[in-house]
Structure formats: structure tokens, C-alpha cells
Amino acid sequence: MLMQERRLEILNILNREGIVKTQDLMEHFDASESTIRRDLSEMEEEGQLTRVHGGAQKLDLYDLERAIEKKRIENVDEKRLIAREAAKKVYNNDIVFLDSSTTTAEMVPFLVNKDLVVVTNSPEIAVDLMTNEISTILLGGRIRQATHAIVDSVAYAQLSTCFFNKVFLGMNGVHPDFGYSTPDPEEALIKEYALEHCTAAYVLADETKINRITFTQVAKIRSIPLITCCEDPQKIERLAAMTEVTNVYPKNDLC
Image 1 (cartoon, one colour):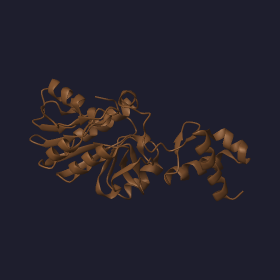
Image 2: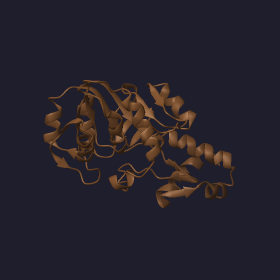
Image 3: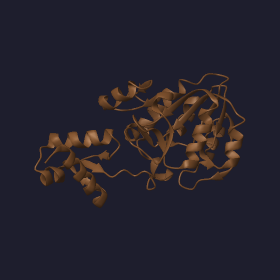
Image 4: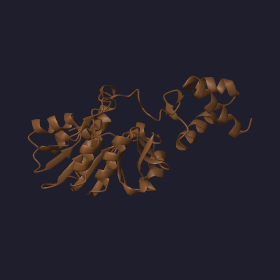
């Protein structure tokens, strides 16, 4: 079987089953483990699937199953490392925007004792900021149930009158070709407004977001530096050719 035919069949299997094991693909195609791993790796780079431990799964463009409660407990150490590195970009007297993200939320403890004003569209981040005695502005508007992010025309109107020294954004997808993306168009618009009104912006995303595509593109990779924690040098190499990438892997002791 030709490579193109094999990869098309892998996509057909994923469309039917949603997830597939590497071992099952080896038996189905009578192929070596290295061949199947190469197929899955290159297909992930092309945005055709997402690799998981022991196999691959169908792309979830809307990311609906991963609500905020689940995201809070995933990859916490990696998110904290990314957040600590991001906080180094913040200086006294900065006006900062933190969008609603479980990774940007981890920045709050590292901002203590800095003289700042922080604007956010996350009620939970706002409470954390206030608890740590950081000057806080919370955008108004409707709260999206899945992510607890404030979105709608009220928040857009407020953002259109603001300007920030630094903007820090979480993303659901970081793909070399499609760019930075998020499932919800309303949240994407909040991120776009923030990007249009700042001196510097950074995307914070752990390794699980790299080579993923979700429904709505926010920006191309070339326009915004990435702070991540990724142990796969090939993923980093491709992204680093397109933008500034700060990789905090290997992990150091957390402070």
C-alpha cells in the first residue's frame, strides 16, 4: 500500500472510531512500529490528527469536552513553569492584559509585589489578583459557561478603548501552518482585540496544544512569541523558525 493510501485509511478509521492504537494500526497495515509512528507524527504536523499516548485521536475542532474544570487539573506543573517565565516579561508600572486561560491564571502568584494594573476577562483570575492585592480591572459582559470567560460586545467595546504594555494569551491550538487558534469565535475576538492594542504580546501554551488546530484562527505564528514547555525538539525547531520561542523544558525546580 502506498503511503498516501495508508494515511487516508488512518483518517477513515479515526472518523469512524475517534481514536486508534498504534499497535492496531501496525496489525491492520502489516507495518512496522517506526512506519506507523512516522505516519502519525507527520499527519499531526499537517493538522490531520492529534497524537495521544499509544496512538492517535481525531481532531476535536471545538474542544467541547475539555471544560474549565478539567483544564485546571491538567499539566499543572508545565503551566506553572510557563507562567513563571511569562511573568519575567512584566515590569513595574506595566498595564497588563491576562485573557481567560488556565495557563495565564498561573501567572498571578508571580506578579505579587509588582506595581501593576491588570485587566482580565476572567472573573476567577480577577478574584485571585485582588486576593494578592494587585490592582485589577474586570471586563464586563456575558460569561461563557464552558470557560468562564467574559465575552460579547460589552467586553469588546471596553477593550477598544484600552492599550496595554503586555498581553498574555492562552491558546487551544498552536499550529505552524494554521497559526494560533481557539474553539470559540467570541473568545477569539477578545484575543484579537487585545492583540491590536498592545506594545508586546505572548502566547502561553503547553506541549499538548502544539500541532493542534481548533475552530477559529486568532493570529499567525509569525506575529506573536510563544512561551511553552515541550520535550519534543522537532516541534520546537519548526516553530522557532517562524517566531521567538521560549521553551522552559527540561523542567527546573518550581519556586
